[in-house]
Image (tube, rainbow, N blue to C red; front, top):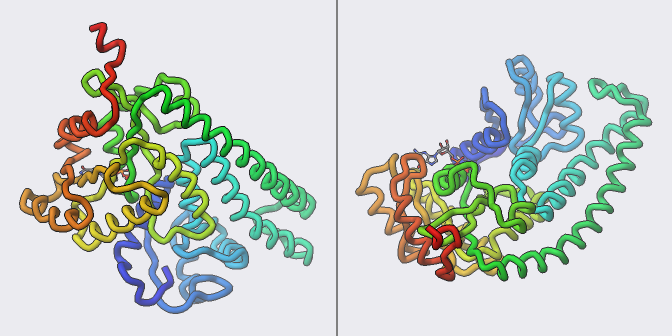
Length: 356
Ligand code: GDP
C-alpha cells in the first residue's frame, strides 16, 4: 500500500482485506509502503525485490496499476499482479443480479483490460517477448479487435435492456409483491442477514423476479409475501471506472419499497457515523428518501447493551430509530420481521396461507 498519511488507514486496509476475501482470495500478507508510487513498479525497487522473494500466488495493489506496472511486476514476480479495481470488478461479477448490471460490469471489465492488452500489443510490435502470456502478436491483435467489437455490442444491448426495465418494474408493481432490499457497506453482514431472514433455498417462484435477479428470495411474513434482495452494497473509494457499474447495482435499490441499511455496530463510532452518512447521501443522490430506509445495527452480539444504547446518539443524527440485531445469533430477527410486515405496503394474504 503506497500512500502517505491516508486518513482512516487502518479501516481502509481492513476493507481492502475483506474485499479480497469476498472476491475469493486468502490474504497471506499485507505490505505497506509510504512515499510516492514508483512509475515502473508501483512498489519501490527494493520493496518489489523483497516481495518477489515471498511465498504467494497473487499480488494485489490497493491503487490502480498502469499496464506498464502490471507488466513489470508480473515479469519480476513471475506471478499475477492485480489491483483493487479488478478485485471490486470480480465481486461485482460474482454478485451482479440484473441483466443490466451484468452488462454494465462486463463493459467495465473490457474497459479495464483494453489498455493492458494495448500495452502487450505495443510490446509485441516492438519485438519484445510476451513472456508468460505466450500468445503471438496475431492472437492478441485479434483479441483486441474482438474486445472493441464487444464493447459496442454491449452498449447497444444496454440501451435495449434499459427500455425493457421500465416494463419490468411496471409488471412487478402490478403483481403487488412488496420488495425489500438489503444494503450497507462490505462486511456489515448483509449476506448473513439475508440468509437468516430467508433461509437459503427458497428461490422466488414468481417468474419475473426469478429470471432476472439471482439474489432475490421470497419471505413469508405471517401470510404476507415479500421479496428480499441482497445487494452488493457500498464500497469506499470506488474507482472511477466502476462508478457506472455501481450505479447499475443501485437500480436494484431504487425501486424497492423498503431498504434495510445494515451497519456493523461493533465498529468504532466514527466509522459507523461516517458510513451511515455516506450511505444516506448515496441513497439520496438516486432519489431514495430516508423514510423508506430502516437502519439495522448488526453484530450486537459483539458489543454490550450499554454500547447498543450509546449507538442511539450516532444513528440518531440520521434516523429517529434503529433495530439492533445479530444476524449471526438470530437476536432481533423476529422484531425486524414484524417491522417489515408493517412497513411494506399492502396487507394481501398469500393464497397458500389463507387456505390453511
Ligand atoms: P456482507 O459483506 O455485508 O455481505 O457481510 P457478510 O454477511 O459476508 O459478513 C461479514 C462478516 O461478518 C462474516 O465473517 C460474518 O460471519 C460476520 N457477521 C455477520 N453478521 C454478524 C453478527 O451478527 N455477529 C458477528 N459477530 N459477526 C457477524
